[in-house]
Length: 206
Image 1: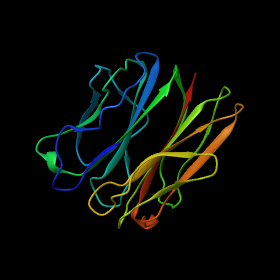
Image 2: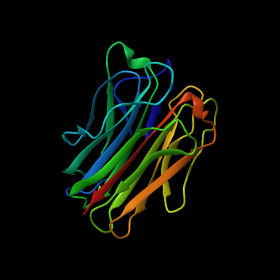
Image 3: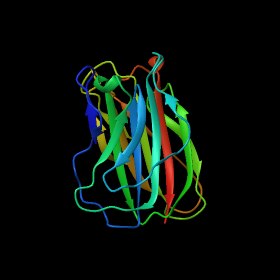
Image 4: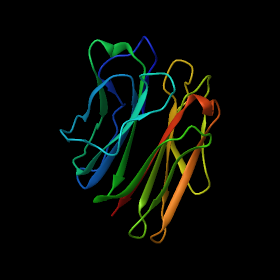
């Protein structure tokens, strides 16, 4: 995870390096931004947007999007980047990156401009057993620390708690059981639901 604060940002906004599996992993990026050119990593992978771009605030110009690279290359020192458009390099932004080892395809996903807290993307109906469910939420925060608490069954992965001068948000995961309907929420400690919020729920199949 990496984030920029408003007025002190830069491009690209890049996560700290981590070691990922050399091959066979699927990488999912959740990005919050004002102006986005592209997303990328340092392994030469190509990312495709999954679902629509979602405004997460009633204030104009604040967006969240989800990108994925299915069965892609990894390795030592893997970083993930959000590339902003000129001249908006100084704008705030957040990147949440997740590796799912062995995921071979996207089963199903849901996207919502939630405007609720807890923040929800709705539900998905999986087609096979043991999908990996990833849930991401971005709230229109009004203070810090903005802490994100997942609903029962989900485990928190990362969170950007700086809701004062940054785009706060969090992500969580769950291993699904048999094929069926699944849903989850992330509760923001600082989000005013009337100001907007956005969420993504994606199921990855092995």
